Amino acid sequence: MPIDADLCTPFLTELDVSGAAVSMFGGAASETLVCASNPLAARIDELQFDLGEGPRWEALRTRLPVLVPNVHDIAPYSWPAFTEAVVATDAAALFVFPLIIGALDLGVVDLHRTKPGTLSHTDFTTAGVLAGQAAWQLLRRVLAVNPETGPADEAALMSRREIHQATGMVLAQSGTSAADALLLLRAHAFANSSTLCETANEVLLGRLSFASRDDPHVSGRQ
Image (cartoon, rainbow, N blue to C red; front, side, top):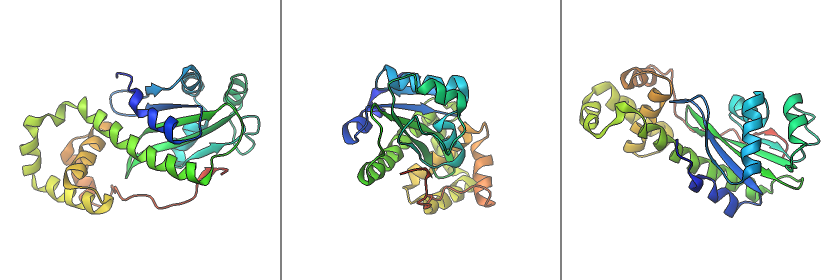
């Protein structure tokens, strides 16, 4: 996947952070670094991928932001290998936000500072909004490499009654447009190696929901 610096740029221009990295999970690859704003951001991403532990995995597991205002004080967590590695870098604080749309887990954005300290309330809120926008951009990237989603298939897909019904349900759950609701269904099917019809049936049976999360709690300290 080509590196897309545009995904990282908003986090740097709108937040008080030193660097950002966006990674995508699922679909055609188990983990793909989409962009890194600087070598340190890329290094933090690489350490977590290589070691299999760190705040990004916590964010993916809980579907909640993970805030680490001081990498020398990661007491609530158990990341011994990652902690030892990250304190040897110039990173002083880490903030990880999951990239989620409804039931779909797309990836994470790793933010860091070179000085300790937590995010302000304004920055925390803004980071959540930016993560949502990045998630939609990643969603379209997933579909760009999905052979099932070519323009020639659009009419056939929309003509299937179960897909049309499921699209309406997802529209109601997610509060998006009909086009974006179908986009969610198609991306979920691709990311889970299933067909669009199978995914639609899961929605119709109530086994899959794209309703937005309203839980205000975060995993970490703010």
